[in-house]
Image (tube, rainbow, N blue to C red; front, side, top):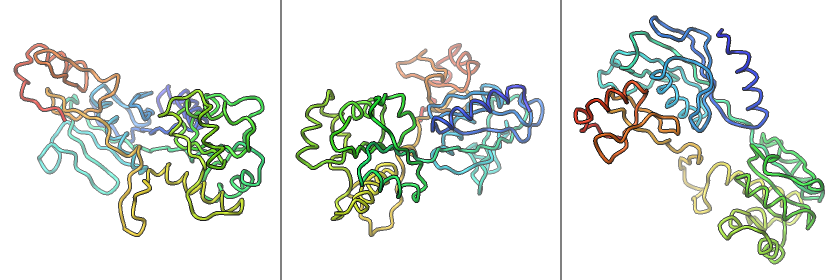
Amino acid sequence: MSPAAPPLEARMAELTGHHVPFVKATVVRARRPASARPGDIALVLADGRVEGFVGGACAEATVRVQALRTLRSGESLLLRISPEETADGTGEPVVEEGAVSVANPCLSGGELEIFLEPLRPVPRVVVLGESPIARALLAIGPALGYEVTEASGADGITPEDLTGTQALVIASHGRNEEPVLVSAVRAGVPYIGLVASPRRGAAVLDGLTLDAEQRARIHTPAGLWIGARTPGEIAVSILAEVIQTVRGLSAEVDMAAEVAVQEPAERDSVTAVDPVCGMTVSVTDSTPYSEAGSDERRWFCCAGCRAAYEKDPARYAKADAS
């Protein structure tokens, strides 16, 4: 185990405590001259940041791409990285059940096998209020596997308090609604529901210090229309709308048809092909790039490939970015 493991374990606990999704990447096999060793660990966050060490810049670029894919799918994966062509000779990743083999021509001759474990938090639902509907939400929500938390708006709820929250439901019937709604919008909570009549809900939205686009993110009256009347039935309708939002369903989906529905987080991340080595790299704020030789920005797996490109851009002018 690398010396960096204890701090990473503390970091994992911190991320988990804040309901932040990430991928734990663990080196399980390394063949020299790979710089990583079995037991080395890195954490890959949803924005592409890598904390820890599982190899040099080229290996890290491959880990980032595959880790983000596992974060979207939710399925663990064994990643094999080798400087040699994959078995099919195409240079493209070879996918098997539970594993993927990637040719990385930038590696200095070694091979790595890295286990990628996506750690996605249990959806967190915050309920504000002490009404019968609020109590029903607190009782029913855990049956869906959600972490349901009762909140009090008496002392104020800040956007920071809502970090990692997937849904906020306000069922306080007029108490402390406005500031909490504003905090939820500014925190980027995916589902925000206000239990109110259509008339009162519209009045509350009109009084918020938010623009029209921000107000449109608030569901009021909260819940799907299923003819609900009792507090328990209304709670079910609200949780159904939470599921619809969290799972990325649209109201127009034909529920009778068998369709494959993707979560918003499952959409492909932006990638590009390194024109020097041919690797697919994930485009993030930290990905090396260059605009030398053309008006088109080129992305690279590491600074070495970027330097090679900038020495002779014309040589790589025909490389296509994906």
